[in-house]
Image 1: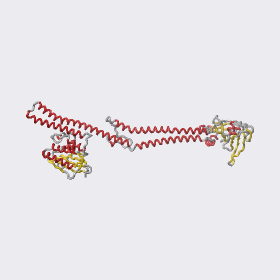
Image 2: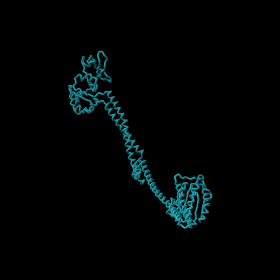
Image 3: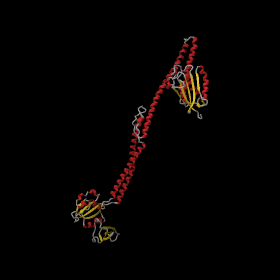
Image 4: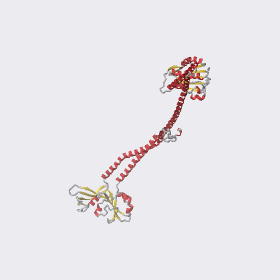
Amino acid sequence: MDRKKIKRQRTTLSVIFLKWLCLFSITVLLIFIGIYWALTVWLTQLLQKPSLAGFLDSYRQPLFAQEYTRISRHDLQGCEFVVLDEDDSPLYASSPAVKVNFSPIELQCIQEYPARRHYSVSLMQKGKGSYLITESFRSNGVDMIDKYCVLDENFRVVSGTLFPKDTVLSKTEFQFINGEYNQKYNVVKYAYEDDSGEKRTLVFYSPRRSLQRDEISVERWNQIWYLLIPLFLLVLAIFGFLISREIKRYLQPLNAALLGIPSGQPADLQNYRGPREFVEIARNFDRVTEQLEESERQKKELDSQRRQMLMDISHDLKTPITVIQGYAKAICDEIIPHESVPHYAELIYHKATAVSELTAAFLEYSTITHPGFGLETARCDLCEYLKEYFGEKYEELEEKGFSLTAELPDEPIFCELDIPKFRRILENIVNNSMRYNPHGTEIFCGLQVQEQFALLTLGDKGIGIPPEICDTLFDAFVTGDRSRGPGGGHGLGMAIVKNLTEAHGGTVELVCKPENGLKAEFRLLFPLASGSP
């Protein structure tokens, strides 16, 4: 899978949540605006009282043209009207629910529009009468009383100039004086001439407004605001669901890829699109998948190496043991002549020694590759120790016909070393040079400081190491019979060198093309001890 093909997105989780927050805020704001607008319209309709002036402004033309049917009852907002001719007979009534026939006194009691004169009703104390009715007109901005009358509790005229004495007003006439009709309508009259010049009287009924009822309506409307809490929670739940669905849409491919790992079939995330954070997760998942694939490959390779190692151990043990068994059986069966027994016993001894060395090497290799393996290091002058080591080794080298060239500095070079383990490193490399090279080969040892490390160079001018085994020389069970020709060995020596060097915090490498006349060259780096120059 190519990580570069995963498409990057500029969108981030913060942008997504900000987008949904803006949509949520706009939605809530629109809901509030809608409720506020509905409340405003309702209150306007509630508080805006229909009036005769508004009626005349809207329907003067059809009214004066006697085209009464053009006046829609729906537009009257609950108002009704009656048109009377010059004899006060009804010409048209918008509804039979209101009074359409009027007596002269009833018409006299109805307030006029425009209000040149108007009636006022006052409740009097008990005595001569109960009600005082006055007819006033406005002069120079001051209300002037023109006529009056006093009514008793039965609406009989007791005294006054407004109506003849002893006239009894009906309940309807008294209501007209108060400007109302049946406690449902406000009533007013308007005298005019139509387009044909005929005198007409318009009696206009408008719905009465009850302040108490309006207050109750407003109070009930205010209770609607309590619905905002569940409405807000509902909108919040809807947006929470939408956000969750969008996040799940981004997470689904990642989840599918994760669930596909155990079956070895992770989902393809090459074309994954999503927030920047999730794209980064997809990239990391892709990287981890590659690492897992590499780990699986290495595991298979290690399993193969382990099987090969077991085969090598079996082979290296089986050959000498088979020889030992054969010679021992021959001696026991007296097949070998008596004078040859010491010779074969010596052969058995050498084979048993080889098996012992292989077992010890394998035990040592198993020990140093164990996770719990550790070193017991101490501060040591590496230059001085190399002089001591090769001083002890010189006699053995000379006896076997090898020469030594050493380039060691005079000043000390201190490192933290586990002396026995460091000696094992030297032994394995030097012994390999002696084992696989002919007599007379020159062995080389050099030491110098390279930055914060001591560089130890060990090599020889022998037959060299074939390039094809350079990459596997430090693997277990790579022996001389696979590299430099016959010469024996158990194939664990260089693997032990590598592990012990790395345990000291250093590195070892085989120089494939050595210089200065060397045919085989190993470079070992060991960290300098703290305080070293």
